[in-house]
Image 1 (cartoon, rainbow, N blue to C red):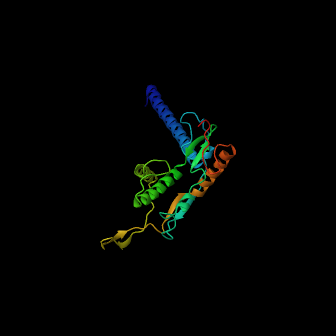
Image 2 (cartoon, rainbow, N blue to C red):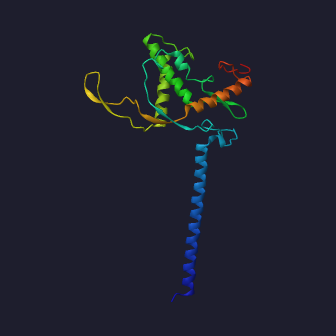
Image 3 (cartoon, helix red, strand yellow):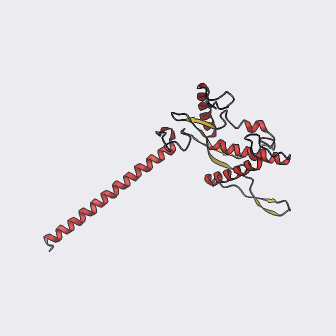
Length: 226
């Protein structure tokens, strides 16, 4: 037979175990709520409220961006070719990728358009090198300096995106005639963000800046006191 003291000890152990189980369930529930809140911020960034003080600001464009798909194509060598300045310029919105956010209308550049700017700078740098032109008129820096910056920036962005889409391997000859596997990347579907929705959001933001007299119709920033 169990003594009264033994029974008391057993019930104490059971009570402690139940209390610990309840605490763990509470912690688990709290973690799930916290993770759910984080997921909501990722899925619906436009719902998140910020104080706009210090670093309490959005890290991504606070707009819900739907998913999209892109089938990689290469219609011809001329489309967005090395010397097609107007076609490359058409990629950029009037704001050149800048957006004003928050009560003080703080300016941010959307990384997508910074990346496009760097790709365009590499295009320009290649064309400039072919013709011996060593200055980049966009910001007064040398082509080499700008190209080096963009190579570093795009390398890190590509690593960050880490696109794991599988591209078909095909047998082809290299410059020496050796047969080996290569990949063109063509006719492969990639999962994307809807870039047209991003541009539409920036265009709407630009119209607001234009109406407030913060920017000219051609996208030039108006700085008071400068």
